[in-house]
Length: 105
Length: 481
Image (cartoon, each protein chain N blue to C red):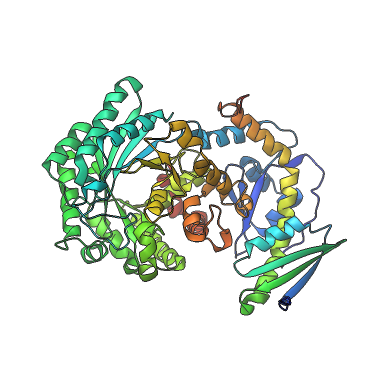
């Protein structure tokens, strides 16, 4: 059986992979997975996102929303990394008083 | 056009504490800290926060007060966040306060949306036996919770009062040496309420929870029974309980069916006319008989959100006119938003409330992680069956994969989208709902009706809280209940 003809994406976004790590882009794409699906491929410093619309009438808005969300996800990742130490400290202090995180846990 | 954010914060005396954010259509940004305390920022203020270039002293104070930023190395915010986080998770140490006993599947109602798989009143083989009831009481007392609530369900539990009495008396006997705080609730349609039941409830301090779907014709349409008098019997039962035991000893729950849509004001008015000040605008659940009936009688979550919004607008109008009425779900959410106090609602927690918040002992001795899990089992899906009272130890029930796997997989602190969501601390994991609707305990949140419902509720409450001083005062009072 020959492979079926691959479905062509409805749009393609090209991003700088250093400024937009794949994890960040995938998190953004997930938020819109009810509207679009996104295939992410990395080639060197280029990240290519093939976008498939569930409803082509919504594609334009969805692309704008996706790009805006990618920017927000970059910030979320930065805050997550920057505050990881203090988050772990808060959790350690909190659970050190509960008896839930004893030596045997 | 959204402002470009630099990738690095300015070096200086301030540093970020963990926070999450969601944007509003009007340009404001909701920012929540690690324990769910929130602040709304303008777009410019949010950029200043992201870049740590905060020149406005008022903004600086707001962000420090909400533990979103701190002076570099400052210890007090860590202590305070830890204390609040610990308070929010205290229930994990004192787990399983709610124990539901399905004393029979028999019921004389034949409600189309019924969440359980009822049996006709002559089918006594679907009653819980005394041996099973005693084993269930044993299991309940294995819970470390200092408070144990015994809730009797069905079917119609008044059809098996013998077991209701046995469980109540056995629990009270055991508690003479255990010293827990016990509570007993019968979830009943009240159609079969009689003096013997009232005598028993009086003697043992038993509460009642009943169903009231709204005005007479709506209720009777939703809840058919022989004689088509479900509403009349429920109202009569409520009056008898109040007269004999006190006004506070009976509460009511409604279920939103397709027939309820567009009638939220009538429903709220009915509750007020019947002397209830709490209305829980509950959507139809996708379980049990309701699962099979949903195609015919169901509706889209958008319709429920419109129903809820109209209902809340009306409730706030009534409160402004001096009529104190509370929407129960909103009050639970507001308690999470505005306080660190325990809210006691097992469906809005993460880790999920299954097992940790509640256990269900079925009439046949099977133990389920939640009532909804039991309903699925009645339709052949035993995913949330933890074991059996006759064969499994308490340790086996509580540490098996049937409980721990869905708890871990649905945890919102690590779930896709939930872990980034500014509403996460107010929301919950509902592995049974997602299993029932999409086949896995996590679900895909962009397509999840649970997520849509809660997001809509959070946004409604926040919008009113932010801009309406009168609503803010009401919401604070609800949160403090």
